[in-house]
Image (cartoon, rainbow, N blue to C red; front, side, top):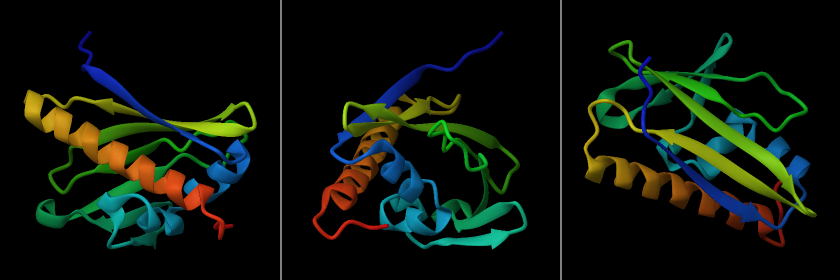
Length: 138
């Protein structure tokens, strides 16, 4: 059995976890905080299509809405490679903890893995700023 090295990137957000989940789990909101999806998502049946920049369009399938804070999603690249992304929002006192499990892909060197983790951290920081802002999104 092959496993990939993993890093969990997380942020504490001073906002009710359900409000964070309700906002963050909607694909139409993701361009507001997930920079890799800044160009937006277009619905295509059960999937969403995103402009993957230099790699081309990618297909994204999200976990269905649920009561557990799970926003897992599978990204399928144009070459057919599927990347499983685990994203969770869980209660943390009166607030939330948002956790992204980053898996190091086989072709990634240390620098690329660190850059990926930094990218995820910036996205979670952006989500925290949005959710903690006085003009909170709904």
